[in-house]
Every structure is written in C-alpha cells, then in structure tokens.
Length: 387
Image 1 (tube, rainbow, N blue to C red):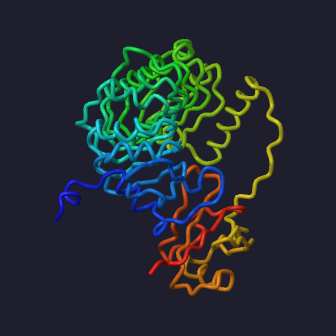
Image 2: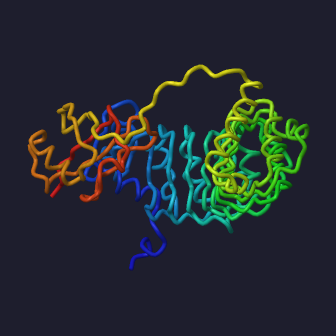
Image 3: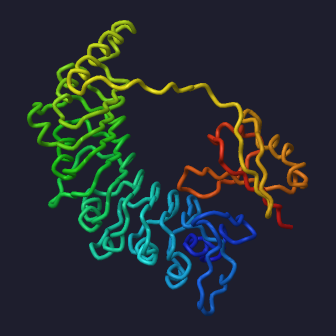
C-alpha cells in the first residue's frame, strides 16, 4: 500500500478527484462556474477544475492539507467548506487549509476526531473571517472552543452537538458576536452549567439544547433576565423539566418569543385534553404579554406528490414535471426522451436552489425522490458517463 493510502489523502487530492470535469458537472449560475486562476505556473491541475464557491468534501479521507500554494490559487473565492467525516486530527493541518481561503464564512468539521488536538492562538487567527463554525461530534475541549471565540471576531453561529459535555468551562473573555448556540445531544443536566452561557455569550439570541436532560432551572426570574437579556428562542426538547415553576420562569426573559418543550416529564403525566387546556392557559399568558397575533397563513402540510424542476443537459434546459413518489431509476427512464441518452449512460445530480451546498448525485437507483426534499424550481443536471 502506498504512503498516501495509509496516511489519508490531502485536501487538494480530494478536490482534484471530486471537482475534475470527469467526475463533476459544470454548474451554471452565480458563484458556481468554472474557476481557473490565471498566471499559475507548473500546476498539473491548471485549467481542469470546476470549483464552486461552496465545497463539499465530506467523507473524503482527508488527513492533510497538501500544497498550500495550490489551495490559495484555487480556493480564493470559496465561502463555504464542508470537511465533515474526514481524518483530520491536527489543527495545524486544518489551519493550512483555512488560512489559504481568505473569504471563508462557513466551516463544518463535524466527526473529525479532534479531542487530543491542541489549538494554538496563532492558528485560531486564521479562522477570523468565519461566521458559522460546526464542531459536532469532534469532542473538542472547552479550551479549544474559548480559543476560537476569542480569535474569531465575526463568529455568529456555533455548533457543539454530540461532544459528550457534562460541564461547561467558563471563558475568560465573553464572545459578544455569537447569536446562535446549537449544543444538543450532550449531558448538560445541571442548570449551574447552562447558566454560564449567559456570561460567555451576552448577545445570544437562540439556544438549542435538546436531548441534554436538563433537570431544572434554578435561578430566579430576575436573575434569568440579567443572564439572557437577548434570548429570543430556546429549545429544551427531551429535557428533564418536571415543574411548572421552571416553565413560568422563562416568561421573565424579556425578548423570549419561542419555547420548544416536547418530550419533557412535566407533560407526560397529563392526558391529551389536559395538555390542550394547559397550552391554552399558557397562550392567554402570552397574549397578555405580547398582544394578539395576526391570523396565520394557511399551510398545507400534506406530502408533495409532484415538483416542476429544470432539467439541464449540456446547453439544453427544459421544464419537467416529475413525480416525487418514483425512484431515481424511474426518473432516469422519464428523462430518456428529454436528453436522448440511455439510462445506463446517465448520471443525475440534484441541485437545491435554497441550499448552500453543491450538487448532490442521485446515486441510489431504488431511493425515492421525495427523500431528497425536491421542490418546485430546483434543478436536475444530467451528465453522460465517461467511458
């Protein structure tokens, strides 16, 4: 076995493989075209990479950065990068990647094992442009989190799910820019730990803490008001709350508009009619505090059966109405007459126009189309297989 196989691949090797014209379609539209740096000398990848501004390289076996000059040359325009489920274990290697992508705003490092990695403050400075950072299932330490929040002046959203936290280590300095903290599926059961987020993130707008089994809210309403003066939304699904006093305290949060409390013990002892009565009583409290809501729009929640999509093949674009209950294999049969290709020679890519991520290949013939959440106006790219 070659050394590159045992050590994992470099970032640039993964890019070259995924985004070469042989393996990835050229996406027309803003920010998604072919990007070829001018004036680069001696690169074997020159003139043959189709790089979107959103790079999705999850599960690509990446453990190292590779040639930094090539990263800088090819990725200067990239604004979002998904490196989840790779083999990255060293912040120095990750820094080599990030420091050469100056416009990066979103970074996903989920499911890379970083529990033993030490982050130097100088390395963290390379992340200064990032607004949204995802560190789910990385087991990063609180020291690492604090180094990031101290060195990332633009950070607005932080994801720390599935990291096995039982406690919260306070930060020496608050992070005044953070608006959203997503920290579900940990073991933060004590309010004495959760309350620390108030001083750490004074501008916090949204706190998502589902599946932490929080057992109570111990502070008074007055203290809560000081701890979380800007909190608008809190999610405590599947927590251990079992007293109405805890729920009532949330009313003291001055900007609170949304509370999510499904699966808590407090409601499990009531019958369905009793739960309804309790929610109506809570509704009247909210009306007293905020006034009556305007009538809501009628929303049809039935599953969609059809979608009108744009089918793109080479320079041809055609509006096609597709059934969402059919499989990928059946869709290929439907498209035979549109693109004049046999099904065995088609590769299909789904492009969600409302998503930040790039094209998603429809690889599995038996998978139903509705599982991709295809909507009207989305795109299907048809690319002939290369021999």
